[in-house]
Amino acid sequence: MAAKFDLEKCIQCGVCAEHCPEDIIKLDENECPYVEYPYECWYCGSCVIDCSVDAVSLELPLFMRLVPKPYEKPEVNIKKEY
Ligand code: SF4
Ligand code: SF4
Image (cartoon, rainbow, N blue to C red; front, top):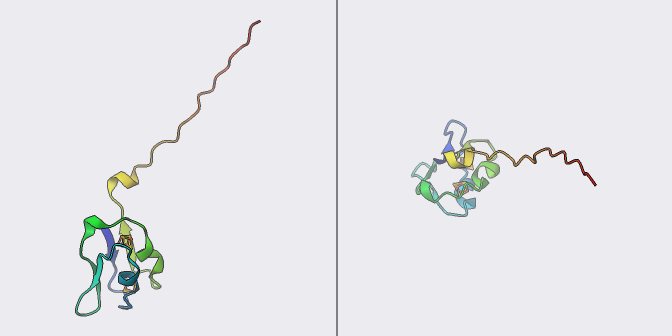
């Protein structure tokens, strides 16, 4: 879960780690990003948006992928009889 990094594309700029509001993205000794505490991710998307080379993707948990069906107002034909 949480952010996934494509290290083929990553240019090791560190922006994702800098901008993560939860401070859960860390850089290893080669300046490559990794998520230290994946269960603390808010899925805010900053890491994805701010990466200039599209090296970050978010794997959303199942509950966030289940979009509830919008409420459909039933069609009601009421004949007014006076
Ligand atoms: S912002 Fe993108 S390019 Fe920069 S370290 Fe993070 S994943 Fe790599
Ligand atoms: S989605 Fe937000 S909280 Fe989660 S790793 Fe990316 S920047 Fe951090």
